[in-house]
Amino acid sequence: MAPPHTHTDGLRVLRTAHVAPVPPAGGPALPEHALPLTFLDAIWLCAHPVERVFFYRLCGAPFAGDADAVLSTLVDSLSRVLHVFHPLAGRLRLTPGKTNRELAKIAPLVPNLPEGGALLAVQATVLLPARRGLALGVTVHHAACDGSSSTHFLHTWAAACAGDRLLPEPPVIDRTLIRDRRNMYDAFASQSRTNEADHVQFADVGKLLATFTLSPEHLHSIKDAVAGKAARRGVPPPRCTFLVATIGLTWLCFRLAGLDSQPEPHGDGCTHLLFPVDHRSRLEPRVPEKYLGNCIGPGFAAAPKKELATTTIADGLFTACAMVAAAVDEAVRGEPGYWERWVERIIEACADDTPFSVAGSTRFRVYDVDFGFGRPAKVDIVSVAKTGAMSVAEDRSGSGGIEIGIALPPERMERFRRWLADAIATLVEN
Image 1 (tube, one colour):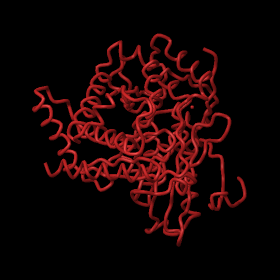
Image 2 (spheres, one colour; image 1 turned 30 degrees about the vertical axis):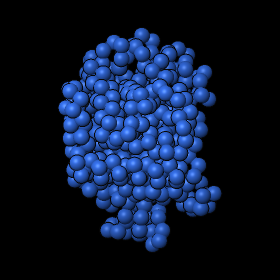
Image 3 (cartoon, rainbow, N blue to C red; image 1 turned 180 degrees about the horizontal axis):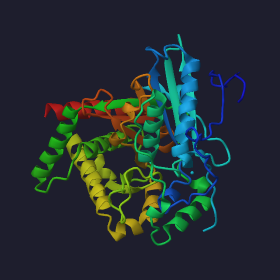
Image 4 (tube, rainbow, N blue to C red; image 1 turned 90 degrees about the vertical axis):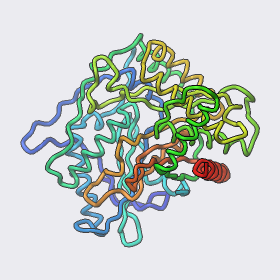
């Protein structure tokens, strides 16, 4: 354990410790063993780790203002939960065959992964004044697991820390459940070794991280606008779920906010969107819901730039939502062509001057992660500043809406906010 010292970002480090899995009382220690990566893991070898920070208020008993008690409880419960989620305590090694707030003030609240292939790092920061707040930063290497698995771990750790007698189901750790497809593991693993320096990375210097909430009323207005536009065009309406409506509107405003400031670098053509699709219920054999690893594939949406830059919000929104809905349908059907073109379509999307992507899900219930000091007041996916993604979560108020997060430079953030507000106002009025 390292002694206290002051971090360069102004945070005072109280303690640093390596937390190892601890078996239940009287139980045997885990032997060292290797767990193979599947092709669905290998996709993420060069990806930036997923960084979340949970903000809590420490106002009630038994933790009010008692930072030492909070830290000790977090460490003790983490060691016990890692015995069950033991792959997250391992290291990655390749074998033959990665509300407006100043991001610079939030980034220090999430830890870097230790060198040597570590897969998980956590950091608890006691917030001043009066030590009445806590920021819990969690960084997970995406090659270790997807969002469903990592939030399953977080819910289990939170329950253990809170002293719950009944913990969530343990994870299923069996990589034989994922069968390779036409040597896709070799393709992704090989690409990670040779093209790591070329992986898309967005500068996060000077960015703002903002959160916006779309209420059920807003989302119904989007669905109605898309259905109305389809009727006027005489075409079948796309399947516009709340999630499709959220992604479509955010993608459109992201594009429009960029067009306000500069001409298109590559003129005409298409702009691209990538979003995760959970394949647990769609693979053969079916993969258990609590599988620990990656079982998501990309949804690929592409839209002509001119159609998103159309003169009316309704036209651009119809195009964006229709393309997202079609991409969801393609990924859900899972026909051979969808799987066989992954590599080339990912490369094509990343070659876009402004690719867009999605992180998180409303299904993860991040606002239910309660370590014994109440629901989090705020949850941010800080890594969207480095990946160029939008984050998605359930509305923290529980009203049934959707919360989105995005990181942009200040001027572009203001344009994005303005486009989003104007679009919502227009849709609600109509």
